[in-house]
Image (tube, rainbow, N blue to C red; front, side):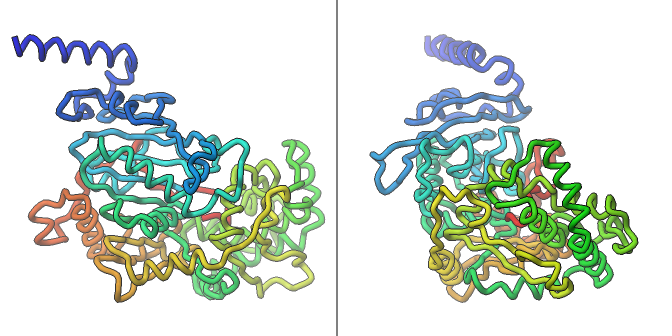
Length: 482
């Protein structure tokens, strides 16, 4: 009788699953069927969480992948004053595996992907869209509720809600602004995660002191490469008049406007001044061969194409800026933004210099900078970091101002991947650091074998690399955005 009842229950769950998820569930395969002792389908467990709703389920062999909405307060200090729907995704492996909590600090991708720590621990992955990036934006938008504490509390509530389903250890991670996000989350909720892996996370402690960036650009790469880039950047300003005519035609042909930044001229200079930064952020030293060797002899098209390829002439249009309004708002209110100088460009060719974030946010949105926010986080990391790993790229400008761990930190590390850019990762570290970082991630996630615990050199990712699923290339955002 008991066998019959168990068989009937299993059949009922199977029919319900096939009826609601169809081919998506079937395609996930037997490897992604980890459930609780009640044998409740994982989708049903997720949707049983108050405030959780399904947007869609997508198939991926060996996993279940869900796009979900989660109801969040607009203001966590006053939850009764309105809510909004925050988009998250869940890449489900098995409830018996650890979980990686990822955020890029911007919009979330709805395509199944697996971040490096997720592959290392062979775990589940929860990914969060940062508040105020569409569609995770309250309506109407009260921009004063976009700050690092509110966003960290979004993460805390999501973790608290999902911890009842994914009961094993959790690791938070993110790259660039996502690495910053993971760090801020740890600062405000240090008891949530069992470890943090923050990639290429800038740490702008004093917003008005940016000399570290100037020093970086005098040493990065080789002199030959720096000279090529500097010459093209300068030439683009020397040829401002003919290239701005080309820009105007380009903008008209694509319906681009310049109301937020104020003029085509301002936008043009902003794009050109991002050129050198953008190259080192997204390219490697070997890519210098693609830069015109003799800028003065290059054609206007050569100069335009090189700048457009690296900086992108669409970025400072209204249409290019609009998706990044939340980032620029935060840069101008808490995160800070770099300012660098251009000693190889005569003053007569520079009209605006690096422009502040205020110029990239509609004037209808009020902004006031709060200098204590980053100082607080920096101090906390130096003195209290625990189970934290920071990874930087040697040739990435954003690493010029980086997090550091001091005497009060425990089991915390800052490593630099030689020759790498804004896509630096654990795999790119020198062998002994790569082994140690991998071993610590496995240990924090509770899945380190006895051999790894005895010797970090034995550490390897637990899941095989999947070229479709595993994201290794740098995520390209428009230049001068982390």
